[in-house]
Length: 281
Ligand code: PAF
Image (cartoon, rainbow, N blue to C red; front, side, top):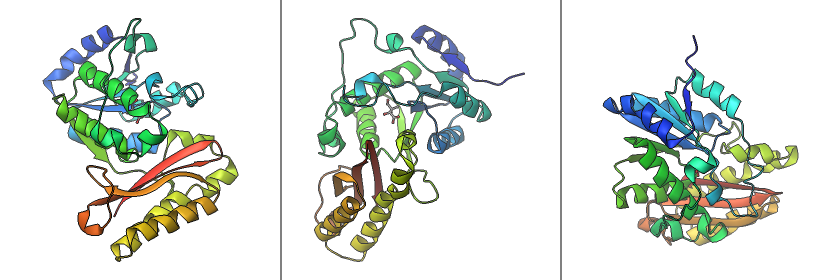
């Protein structure tokens, strides 16, 4: 007998499958597939919080710019299903693009606040509109009690948390700490793009975040620490988009430790691969 989770492809099939689950707490883990240990941690945390766990797998076209990697984004459904079967997930919501965005689709969610913090939004202006729209749909389709997101996409976590509250979506958004490789590199589905040489320097981002957090805690001026960290990242061969100290909740710029709590956030490209990471001070 197999305990493979049921795979649901249409909103009607999802509704039918979810009806009996509604007697108990439901947790949703939204993903774009290509699951790694970070996603699996979200699932194990979901299982601690709810009797029923649904994982969504949908590579959402509206959060990619035409110049980005939507076409080449890793799609590994069979391996994903194997991992989710082992974790005894109840259902996998894997809508077709037509189920998610039917012909004539004409409504978008436009987040503000943390979504306009000048971090990811500055380099990927289309991103949070696409995420907010698809996550709103996922929440209204699945109607979970909890939804678990990785802290690795920290600005996304802030945006989704605010959105769930602002729109009274009735979902408690839970952020789960980043899962890292042994050398500190944050797990990401995009790490498969890295060449051997790029993979070797990729942990620089986390090393700089950690060293910078320690220096700020010791009282060194934030601006100087960020400038020196940026220099180190560039010296390692990255094209740096940003390394910034922000307020951990509002993501507003911060000048001194007393204005905290502080979150350090970084985004940089090594070769063709763009990596992001963050750390609390
Ligand atoms: O973090 C992701 O994988 C995606 O942005 C999400 C939340 C599943 C929305 O497509």
